[in-house]
Length: 114
Image (cartoon, rainbow, N blue to C red; front, side, top):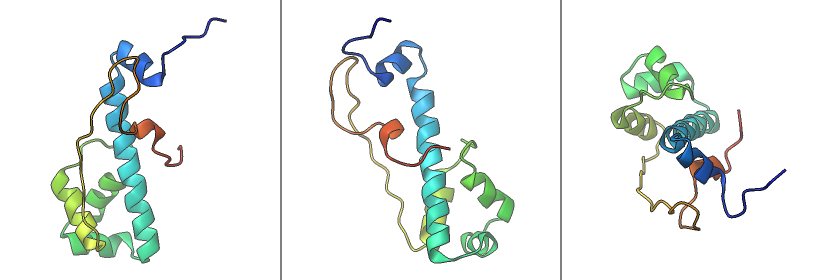
């Protein structure tokens, strides 16, 4: 079996035209995971958090659903504030195909797999 010397998973996804979609889903899963952990650490119920956010429990469940990609920055910021946190978003340089680069892909961010 031949190995692709010098390539990585990001290169494969890029070649298949899937990199952006896969990264977006990975980021959403990471956000849902982090929110879930914060809820557990704070010992707050979903109903209470929804009330603090001024939203419904079903809307909060959509926010916590790792498969639901239709999340707004406003709802993320409300959830963070209700948990005593702040939302931070950054743009990072993307590495060029086949080259090392800065930043960490959300696929390698260290959060547990599903």
